[in-house]
Image (cartoon, rainbow, N blue to C red; front, top):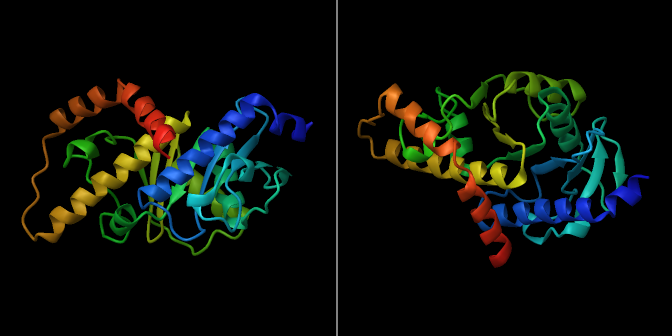
Amino acid sequence: MHLRDFESDSVKRLRADLALALRAAAHHGLAEGVCNHFSLELPDQSGRFLLNPRGLLWSEVQADDIVMIDTDGNKLAGRHEVESTAMYIHAAIHRICKKACVLHTHMPYSTALTLTSDRALDTHLSQNAMRFLNRVAIDDQYNGLALDASEGERIARAMGTADIAFLGNHGVVVCADRIDYAYDDLYFLERACQAQVLAQSTGRQLVPVNAKLAKHVAEQMISERLQSELFFKALGRTL
C-alpha cells in the first residue's frame, strides 16, 4: 500500500515540490553539505511524510530521490537511506506540533543569531523581520546532536505552536501548512537575519520600530500570501 501511494500522482507532485524547495535552498546558499532536512506530511493524516535522503546534496535532489517515512522513523518507500537525526527531529515536530511542512537548516545568518545572547531575530527591526512577529520560539537548551527520540521530542515541545524555532547554538526550523509558504518564510527569515547581522556589524545603534507599527506590518504581510505562491512558481520555472 505504501508503494502504491508513493507512486500516486498526488504524492509525486508533493515529491517534486519538496525536491524543488531543496534545490532552491541550495541555489540561495541555505544548504550545508549533505546535512539538514526538509519534510512534508502526506495530506491523508496517515502519519507518513516525505523527506530528503541521506548523502545527497540539495542541489542534486530530484523527485525520485525523495523517501517516505512514518512518525516512528521507519522508511516506507524510496531508494535511498534516511539520516537518523532527520527521523528524530522531523518525526517529533510532525507528531507533537502537528506541522505539515518542516524545514530545518543551519543557514548562516539565522544560525549566527542563535549564537548571540538574544538567540533570535529582532522582529521589530527590518520589514522582512516584522512578518515573523509573534511567530517565533527560542530553544536555548542545546544538547548536542539529536541522536534519539527524546531530543527530537524536547525540540518539538520547545517549539510548541510557533511557526519558527531558533535552536540555540544550532540552527532554525521553519514550519507551515504548505511547502510554498514554508519556503517563502525560510528565504525571508534568512534575509531578515542577514540584514540584522550586517547592521550589527556596523557597530552603530539599531533602530527598531514601535510595537504597534510592527504588529500592523506583520498583519499586512501574513494576510496576503499570493506572493509566496508566485515566488515558488517562479523557482519552479527557473530551477
